[in-house]
Picture 1 (cartoon, rainbow, N blue to C red):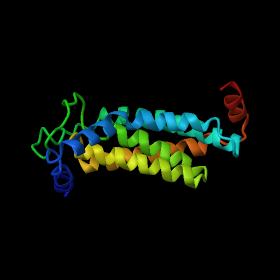
Picture 2: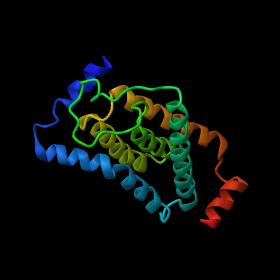
Picture 3: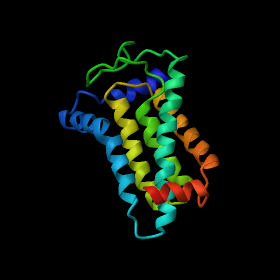
Picture 4: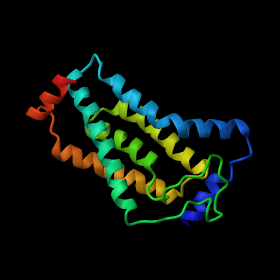
Length: 180
């Protein structure tokens, strides 16, 4: 089913050069744009301390999620869908294993961190960006749908771990927001 869903999503690749270029661009710059969007929240005029805590939580979840992925890659060696003949690849091949998707992890860690801080409008905007990033990874043929789902799960798990360990208004939070 994973291969079928991946193939179905990727079947649009190569039909429209504009769509392909758009998806490649989203895949390449989507995560950096999300990081910039989070960084710009630092200067929020409303509920500044809370939003700053959300920004720091998102950054920590982002980093922890990618660290979790590196640990997973030590044990899980899934070939890329283009190597298995499932997808048509629109970009240069990747040298690492397919599972989990770092792009999905990074983008969903940010979304989950903001969601856990009860910032619905910001969360929704970030979720739209994350969904486009995740879809683009399937469209360009670099990941299976399961890789993206696994990456999203590690991102959410990382955000949950940060939420449990990094409390708002704690001495660490006050110190971190003050030095930054």
